Image 1: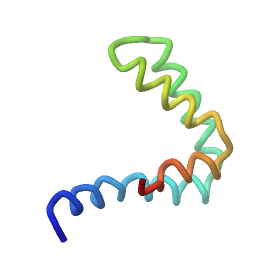
Image 2: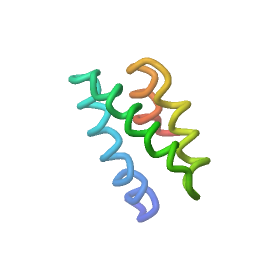
Image 3: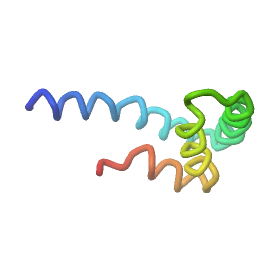
Image 4: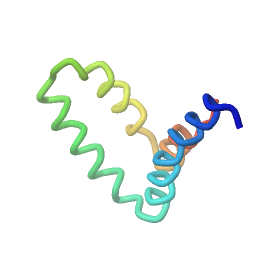
Length: 72
């Protein structure tokens, strides 16, 4: 496997692990949303990224899992 592809696959592994846990324990999503809102309230340089994650986490569990495991 080419190095760039290997790096890409490695970067997906944590997302897939989170997706699996999220499917098993959907309540995790509410905790993640609350934590994210705390981070957004603090502001900072990461605010644009946090706001994008807010959009992702605002959907149902199945949609969040789809984003986490999307290979495109």
